[in-house]
Length: 295
Length: 153
Image (cartoon, rainbow over all chains, first blue to last red; front, side, top):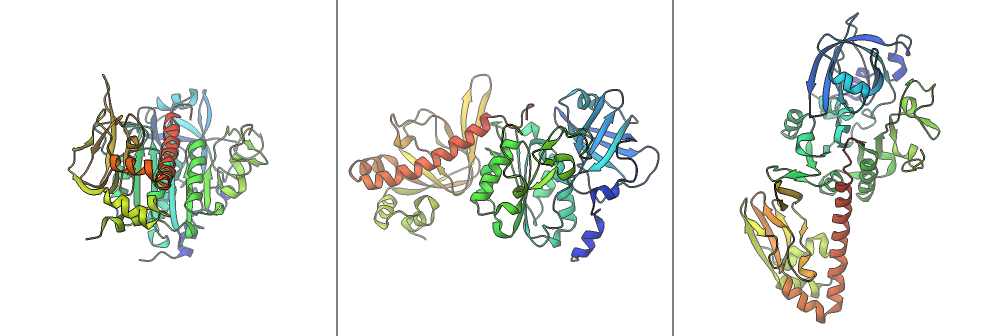
């Protein structure tokens, strides 16, 4: 059945602040329902509201502030399905004090959640066009909600391409889902790793090298990129070489977010605040800032 | 069946090259087929050919003591494989193994080298194109070396 544009619009909150019903600075208690290891240093936390069963609506690409009581608070992108708002899903890499503490949380533990914050992926603007999703490392996590949305409304989009680069085969996130998506006839999935031993049968090379080998109409496509900044920079360069205009490229930026509502200035990026104006930006909004070392 | 010069002309590598040069290069070309697991060449062997992959995938590999076989890069349909035929001492520095049934167009590097010594225009056209591939591979290698997805990322 064909998905109507108007139907799709109705399912997503249109204003990120509109879904914040309480004081955005006060964390709400959520219970850990599941902690699932993804790779050696990455895991997924599934959370549910501890005091109500109200759905947690969000836009693909938005983030939450997760608080481990007595340890600290960190911004984490939402990586679950926006159509399943009863469960809040985050995929987290254990790299600092707070995220390492999260890695040790057991089922039933309580964490504080503030959010959702920020501007998400342009899943509505991308309708009737090809969608090129380029993810690097844990950058696949913030893009997964966009993929869920696009695949749920598959008829509303043109070609759908997912290009994913990881460090090694052991670092690939969501392997089962990637296999499932690759088995679909209505999307193109290419995975590559930067290094591998001889028993790996997939691509070896950087993710940017996959772009020239992918079919999409650069003049009628939207690109969504998330990964380390250097990977995004060279992905943009490769997309430009393919003929894609800058205003069709979207990137998700990462900075040190603290208040998440544009007050504290920790995540200031030139005249922008990543927490409020981003984390997803159209490339033309930030191209003059992109790559400046001091910012 | 398509003549080899027609096949070559369609490949982006030869874009802008004269008919005469393409015809000459086609005279140095032959179709080859490799089964999954076959080696196109091995580390240390004479580099007398280079390849255009028409179908399939090829892994470029190095063997490191105590680490086993390391895959440096994989190449697929449309990719050009090898430039050691152009640079002394004309030896391969890694293994190239077919990962699937692979069909290639193999070009006789010795024959081309000889021709390039007398036809500088052909030599320049080939060098320009090989330099472009080298630049792309060097660039990709630098990104791989950065370990972009490491803990510091």
